[in-house]
Length: 206
Image (cartoon, rainbow, N blue to C red; front, side, top):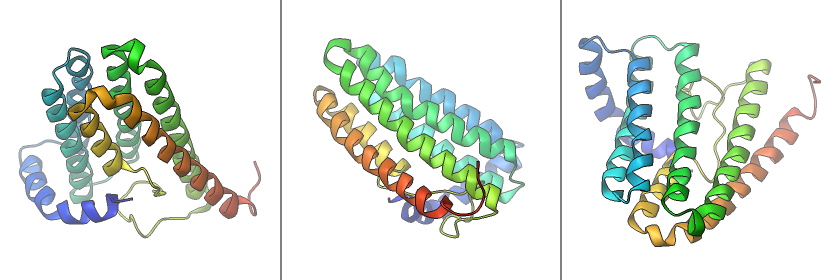
């Protein structure tokens, strides 16, 4: 919901950092992989109770996510880059609830499983809409820099990361936060299914 506004606010600083990285010979894919691996360090950090360090891992992952797209747009965007970006993002998102389940399976297991399930709903509807939009040659002018049709919703990247940080700051409330955010993800999934039904009910068949 807030991704577009945040991306616009950070565009200038990201471009300045990206320029230096480009001069050093780094490519967008390098940053994508580095950010993903850094983000995965949050799993053992959360599982072992080192939550403030986990927040740093999450933050660095998001900085890398902004930088790889900026570098791609300043050089040459590729289909491989777009594929890696979204694939590794979804794997990272699922890793955080998994980490809280590992930290306390008895207390967090059901809430973590439900949250990951809700991510499947938001993710598959997002990607299915993007695939069929590409098939029709449709683009989203609200997100012109994306490598595919970017369908917004109530729970986008900004909201998800804010929730992850809140979980790290209030780990004893993980279950309640996870249930609440899973509900918002469910609303996003329903909205995207509705959008897909409205857009794709005519035209190409399966």
